[in-house]
Every structure is written in C-alpha cells, then in structure tokens.
Amino acid sequence: MKLEFHGHDERYTVEQSLLNLFPGELPVYEPIAPGDESWAVISCREEEGRLLVTVDLRHHGEAAAAFHAAALSGTDYEREGQRRHAVGSCFFQAYRALTGNTPPWGMLTGVRPDKLVTQALSEGKTLDSARAMLEGEYFVTPERASLALETGAAAYEAAKGLGSRDIAVYIGIPFCPTRCAYCSFVSQSVEKSFALVEPYLDALAAEIEAGGRMVRETGLNVRCLYMGGGTPTTLTAPQLDRVLTAFEAAFGSALDSCEEITVEAGRPDTITAEKLAVLKAHGVHRVSVNPQTMEAHVLEAIGRRHSPGDIDRAMELVAAAGFRHVNMDLIAGLPEDTPEGFRRSLDRCLAFGTDNITVHTLALKKGSRILLEGLAIPGPEAVAEMLDCAGPALRRAGYGPYYLYRQKYMSGSFENTGWTRPGGACLYNIYIMSELCSILSLGAGGSTKMVDPTRRLIRRRFNPKYPKEYAERPGKALENQRDFAAFYEEMGR
Ligand code: SF4
Image 1 (cartoon, rainbow, N blue to C red):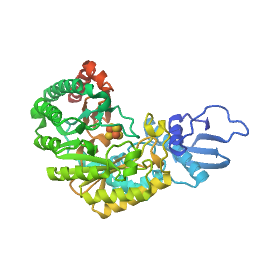
Image 2 (tube, helix red, strand yellow; image 1 turned 180 degrees about the vertical axis):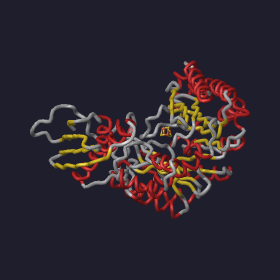
Image 3 (spheres, rainbow, N blue to C red; image 1 turned 90 degrees about the vertical axis):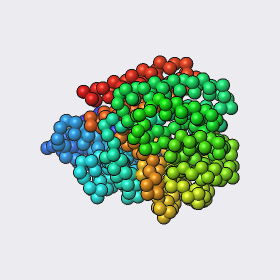
C-alpha cells in the first residue's frame, strides 16, 4: 500500500496498523498516481493545543476517510504518545469505514494487550475505567476486553508477591521426536541429531553450574523454574535426572523460596512412567502435555507421529504420577481441522479434568512446513468459531483466563490464552508474559530478560541459537551471566 504523510512522520505507528489491519500489504513510499488501487494519505496539523488527523484510504476499489481530533497535553514524551495514538486511531477508523470490520483486538497491535490493564490498575484506576479505555479508545470488542481485564488483573496480583531480587529460571531442551508442521523453533529432531544430545547436556550442565553460582553470589531468589523446549521429555529418564540434579546442586539456597517447577512433557509419545517418576522425585509441581488436537487426521497433517489413543495413555500415566497441576495445550486453526473437530478436541481435553488448558491460535511462522509446503488451513471465520466455542465452554467448566499474548501472523489476529481452575495459575507464564521479573534462560536459543520494574527497564541477552553452536561456544552464555549480575549490581546502587 502506498503511504503518503503530511505534517508528521509517524511511520512506525502507520506500518504497525497496516500489518495489523491489512495482512499481506507492505508499505510503499512512492508518490500516489492516478489509477493506484491501494493507498493511504495520513495528514496531521496542530490547532490550539489539539491534533487534527485525517486519513484517506483506498483499497481494492473501495474508498473511505476518517477524521480524529485529540487534545495534546503534558510532557513532550506524553504528547508523543498522544500523537501516536491519534494517528493509529484515525487509521483504524478509516479501515473500519472502508471494510465494516472491527477486528477482535481493535487497533491494538502489540503482543500483550493486557499490559494496559495491569498498568491502569497499578496507577489506581478501576477495572471499569480500564474496560472503558479498551473499548472506547482502542476499539477492543467486549469479549476481548473481558479477557484482557481478567488476565491483566492476574498479572497485577502476581506482581504484588514479587520482591526486587526475585527471578525466574528457564532451561531449554531443544530436541523433539519429530518436527511439527507449524514449528519454526530451533528445536532439532532427535532422529537427525541424536549425537548432539550428550554434548549439549555437558554444555548445559556447565552453564547451570555457573548460573547457580552467579545467582547465589548476586543474592537473588529463584521463584520458579520452567523447563521447556523443544520437548524436555525427549530426554531419557537418566538425562532428565542429570539436568534436574545439576539445577538443584547449583542453585542450592537460592531455591528456598522456589514455589513452582514446571516441565513441558509436550509430546505424548515421549512420556513414560519412568520419566514421570524422575520428575516427581525432583519435586516437579506441574507438567504440560500438549496434544494440540485430539483429531487423528489433524495430528497426521501436522507431522505428529502419535494417535489420540497415545494421548489417552500418556494422560493416564500423568494422572497416576499425581502432579499438583497439569496443563494441556490445544491449537485453533491447524491444517485439516474444523470448528466441529476443534470442539471435539476441547471436550476430550475437558474430560481429562486437568486444572489448566491453554488455547493457542495458529501462528504462521517463517520456516514452518505450513508455509513452505503451502498446507491449507482453516480461514479466520472458522478460527473465530473455534475460539468462540472455547471461551464459554471453559468458563462453564470452571476455568478462567489468567494470561494471554498475541503473536505476529496469527490466524485471524486472535490470541493465545491460558485458562486455569482457581488456584492453578502457572506463575512463570504470568511473569514472562507480563514482564514482571527477570528470566535467566539457560540452554541453546535462551533469551534472558533482565527486568527492573521500578525503572521500567528491560535488557535482553541471547544464547547461541543452535545446540551445536551453543555447545561449541560456552563463552557467550557466561558473558550473558556476567551482564545479568552487573544489571543487579547497578540496580542495588
Ligand atoms: S513439539 Fe514444539 S518445539 Fe517440538 S517440533 Fe513440535 S512445535 Fe516444534
């Protein structure tokens, strides 16, 4: 879409709106010519302390225009925010006039729409005023506003329980039995990279040891551990034991206030009673089993090598092991799935009686087989139908939403939502999604986040992406840990 700006340069805001509202359209900065079929002219002028914005839009033979006036006040920084909001709002209103559509999240383009709610609550505002803001200023639909209010309030409550030296730890196991069609992670199929597993675990054990020492010496408290991937249960029982033993030995007294240990047991075909016994012996509180669908033909279409019956058997083993919390993941919008099929999957998951169910929406990621092979996927209306049935069904079964996030390139521009029965929320999910505390990430592809909530400061460090590179370059992970310690020294000063 050709873009023309007059009286401003809000390029980032307009490009984000374009990506959100016209997926597939790229910004083009060339003069608009007679006969062009896809363009927008965005004009701003200031008059007596007000910003007056007009947007003229043309797309596929249809044309529309919008006008928006906003008061400008406060500091330069605040006025900049008001300007960005006014431009985004006017572009959205022109889009709505053109198409008659109101996307579920309105004009919000970010990955964490509930952050606005958490922020409003921490400024002393009420949930009612937060709802008025979401619906009135950002055009969020009432259903999505309710989701954001509940998850934003959960984050606000979780933040109250965190001290300034509380952190979370993530350990990544980037191996899976086979690769799913929608996957773009660095995860390697063990069939192809079996020889990498032991060298990877050697490097990981060394990083865990150094990380534990750094955390103890810096005087930090680990509030939760999340072991994800990949699929951690791709490891054998002795390998899982080795990683968890290394973690306990290295972090020692820093674990005194650790409330939660979660291990993703994502692929049902990797779950055995022996591995679950190892997890139980190490005090793991929560496991996550991720069938994604209970439909046999959909499992096949996404490249899973297990059947719905394997999921039933895995869930029996998990139930027999007696974990305090169990999560199951589903994805709306998988290839070959239908609203009826999704509903059957959800009903079967509900029948297992786990206290957590996470409903994802398919995100089309670069490098995934879905895009590379052009697999057919359900359209946005079908995905909307799946999610519209999921929310009420989960609420009827006693679950409420407690965390959510959006991704780029999501089918229908929806969201991923974690649902829990009372008392079952996973702290790690809230901490990471709402950026409430630092996350020390150990392992290949680890993305460490250093968070200072007081200064609203976030810094990131990344470990080498691939297992081989990670094992061969231990220096990078150690450098990241030094930066982590320095961040807290700086905070303490
Ligand atoms: S289980 Fe997850 S990480 Fe592994 S291949 Fe599938 S989507 Fe990728």
